[in-house]
Amino acid sequence: MSKATALACSNIAFVKYWGKRDEALRLPLNSSVSMALSQATTRTTVAFESRLCQDEVAIDGCAAPALVRLRVVRHLDRIRQISGVAQRARVASFNGFPPDAGLASSASGFAALTLAGTRAAGLELSAKELSCLARLGSGSAARSIPGGFSEWHAGSEHESSWGEQIAPPDHWPGLRDIVAVVAGEPKPAGSTQGMALAQSSPHFETRLSLVPGRLLRVRQAVLDRDLTSLGEVSEEEAIELHLIAMSSRPPIFYWRPETVAFIHRVLAWRSEGLKVYFTMDAGPNVHMLCQEESAGSIVAALEGMAEVQQIIVNAPGPAARLCSGHLF
Ligand code: DP6
Image (cartoon, rainbow, N blue to C red; front, side):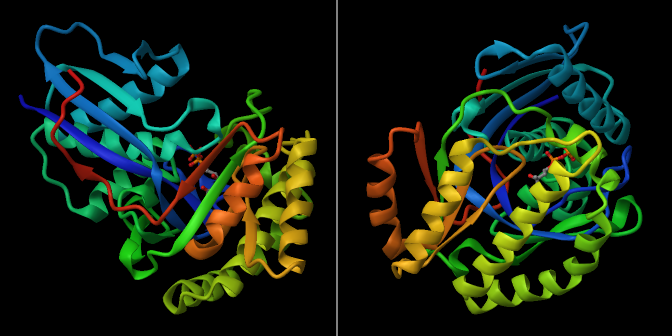
């Protein structure tokens, strides 16, 4: 059986995925839209080998922790089931961004694992099939398979819940997502755990009723390269994701004091005429959406802030792809 290596970008959602209709199939309660992040990539090599008695999983040069390994092994089992391959696999994965940066490594990780794993098992799946399969590993990975600007159609069963590219990266090459990493402490709850509580928030249904209108606005904003409209929806969605987390039972506070300070900073910049908007994942770090021409002054300002530990400047990134340069 051959060895295969794949590279995939993480992504930042403009309209968020926060709540599942089906936990086992990772079917979301709403469709979502994201941009692939050019500087947040995972490279993964997979080889099925008859000499192995169990799957070997290394991430960033170390044996994967038990729970992470279990999630990877379950995904390899899915690949074994559809391909008929019985051998155990050796998996090595490297993230091209720091693990504590708060970027979604499960999106890039499961997208790269799906592509490399299926190829190593001798399968040639379509982009849609790859996206459905990646979704079973981690929901947001469904959008990292198509890359660029993509929409994950919520769907109603396994085959109809997948990520589709709505515009390629070069449709809006000047859009930037700048991540200011403020806190290296572990998050209070992972996305899977946090999302499981989402429906206990009294605000959950309200947000869900607003999502269809936001999807329309975001799709149009991407097609028109309209930063104002994209930024407005992204801020509404980021605030409401955290509103739901904070009002879940029990509540989850992903924000740190620095998160709030950053939101104020972005609002102040905007009132001074700089076109910049914020969004966030389920973590304390703030992502800033702007055009290429504003990125320099934002980065310069961030470099002067003591609380900023790292700055990552992303352009729209490509689809997951096979590559040479095996990791073993
Ligand atoms: C806040 O895809 O990490 O980033 O399906 O349980 O693995 P699982 O969750 P995951 O959730 C991502 C949540 C988010 C919003 C988003 O990316 O849409």
